[in-house]
Image (cartoon, rainbow, N blue to C red; front, side):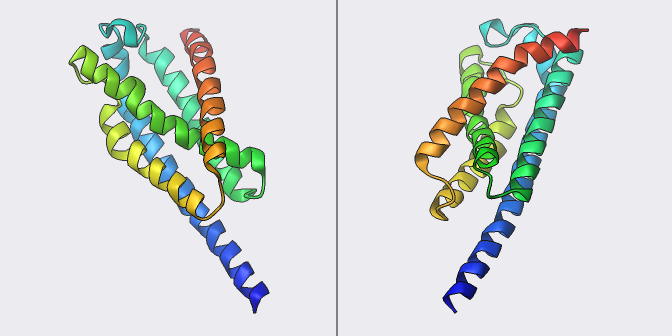
Length: 171
């Protein structure tokens, strides 16, 4: 009976991960659509928080980043025993939690204007991704150390590729 309970628990965790990936993808997509609609125009007068970016540059970059989020999510669901895919997925979750605060909330406060992405960042990405990380931690799927390191690594990679994606989007 113990083996049966372990197997049921593993299947339950795998099913839960599917829902977590789905909620993450819906949240990041909604957030990125909000940014895509208003950020290029906002960036033309947004001070030091965002260098001016054209719609083509931004739309290309946000599309690629959204696709990367989907790929990481679905590969993690499919190959849930892969540590690398787990770290990529939780790194994306953590990066989007951090992204809701900096730059979105901070830019809104400092510039005293609506920074595109702040609404979905605070109302979707922050709570949904925090809950997913909390639940995965409570299920002993991830550790706090994994959350921190994965967030730093994935966040760093995302920050590094954004200017490259803008440059490609210019062409």
